[in-house]
Length: 185
Ligand code: GTP
Ligand code: MG
Image (cartoon, rainbow, N blue to C red; front, side, top):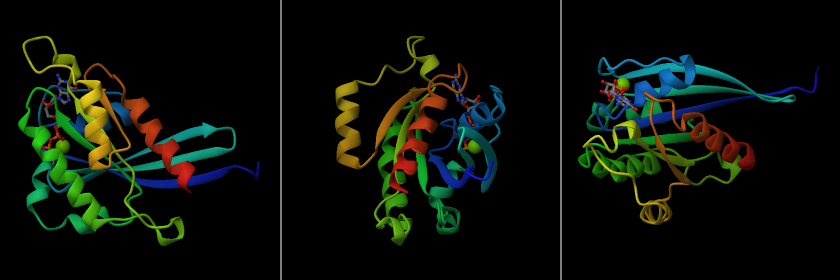
């Protein structure tokens, strides 16, 4: 089986405080969820190994960056050599959507793709998280046309409504980002 190829990709998960970054990663990697909120301090890591196809194994290194880090100045180290990112906001707190542009600008200013791949911004996916709370008096569904336009104007490759609680669209979002990077490489 010497024709199996292995890829190691570093992905960042960023977004304002309490938007669900850690919960999304825990759901994706360990398939668990807790309502208990324990804010991340600094950065945390998780590894997800995916048998992508019979010939391809992808090791995803997920960097879970604390929401408060946008106001710190250690982020350049965290961002180093990342190939993709998720920016997360909380659909029940519109002010966290304001943070989305700032996180995207921060990513664009601090990382780019390897020179060998032509440089340029790394692919970034926008996640509208806590979609399970929509319709229970909190938040509302994103307008697909408006979100598509927002993504186009702000350089996001795609957006997904996710729920770490209900396990909605998290695999899909990760698969989209991996597919994009496999296509660039
Ligand atoms: P920081 O580390 O402080 O930046 O926060 P975070 O973005 O990592 O958020 P975290 O995953 O810790 O989640 C914050 C709170 O939101 C917790 O109480 C979670 O249980 C809750 N939460 C996260 N995702 C969801 C979701 O999809 N649905 C619901 N209902 N609650 C969620
Ligand atoms: Mg966290």
